[in-house]
Image (cartoon, rainbow, N blue to C red; front, side, top):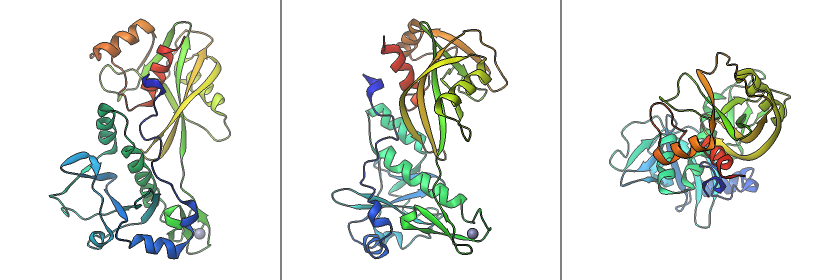
Length: 302
Ligand SMILES: [Zn+2]
């Protein structure tokens, strides 16, 4: 069943080769190897093959010499190639061969065709490049930092501090009460879309505590048991969505300002909208969202 599949952006397809990150000689050799492949990004979008937009347009090291580039991120290896991620501000280069696409669109297209590992490969490059762009100066002393260890560390030129890529954990919960589930909509959602409640974890919280706090704050519902279901990397810019089912103790909804609306829905209503695709009154989040996986997990479980 669908809910048993991996979420899009999950299952990184390469061996990340942690042991090579600190080996500068080996990394330099790989960077200039004729079989090495470069994934090109621009403004957070990935270069895809204009003849098949489901495939990245990989570049070799000779072609990327023509670009002004930011960091070179070592993504890892498969049986045949080493992979790097690079970003360029240059416009119009390779315009006849590539099209830069947003990762949401790439993920959406992959979901329509069935599961693909391409979004996961592209997501890691995007997350690391975003992190480098936003951490050029040391948070400790303010001096410039530089990329190190294949792009998995930034080191300070001043105080020598090492900074590591960050991931922001978000809890996303299918709240259930007897045979119904709670879905809400934010003010910026597409018309009719209702989805699982979600929120960033706060320092010092467990997943269970974050789930209970968020649902109480947003909808006035108390949560008892919390069951982990699955997680999803979310590269906008760098979150980890932690998907759970939370059992509600009460069903009296009391909204705060974050949600425009929240309602309880029956399994019959959810099944019906999955079959019909929904309308401007009620539709579900797209298949690329972990919220959709959680809904189907609940729907098909006893
Ligand atoms: Zn410093």
